[in-house]
Length: 98
Image 1 (spheres, rainbow, N blue to C red):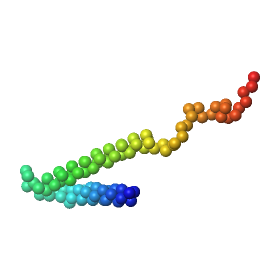
Image 2 (image 1 turned 180 degrees about the vertical axis):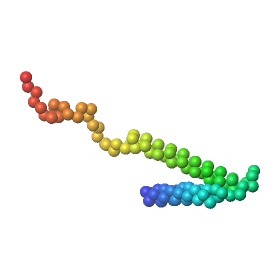
Image 3 (image 1 turned 135 degrees about the vertical axis):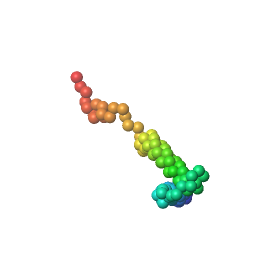
Image 4 (image 1 turned 90 degrees about the vertical axis):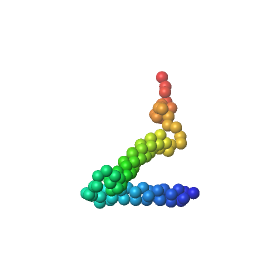
């Protein structure tokens, strides 16, 4: 079960990385193209690549925010509760005499 999840995660990571790198390289390659005006197919592809990069940036920011929240809420990993007062006379075994 866990290896299947790890495999799926690795495949998804590779697909996202391939998409981002392809978009970046395509933008760099076609940045100085001869535009034919309205309806230019190269400009359409550039717009799609830019949208992919924007969506990836938003998804990465959302994933980081969710991870931060889950780490803050669930990341303690403690099973026992810590007392409110850590050191009391009883826990220090202090003899209280008049």
